Amino acid sequence: MKKTHLHISFLLLFLFAKINTWAQCAMCRAVLESEEGKKLAEGVNDGITFLMVIPYILVAIVGYQVFKKNK
Image (cartoon, rainbow, N blue to C red; front, side, top):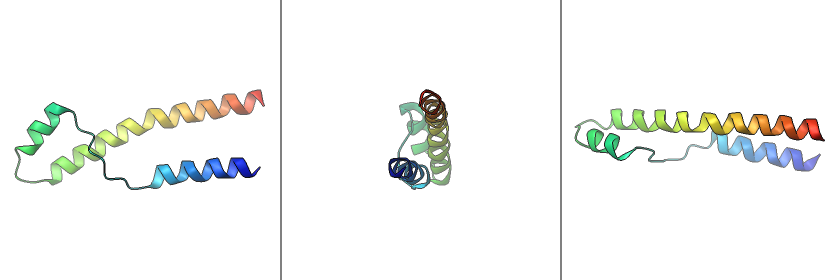
């Protein structure tokens, strides 16, 4: 039972932790660096990070369901 709580704690930590990442492709970076305002670049970074996280969450949910069913 404690292992499950530990896994859930780590999952929540990683989901809600604000990590400053730079998730731009080379072309996006080149276009956004030429601009004066950095707000657009931060928005694109956040969007890319959000789109990157969703598949991992879905795989984790499916993996948990398979684990739960086989247990």
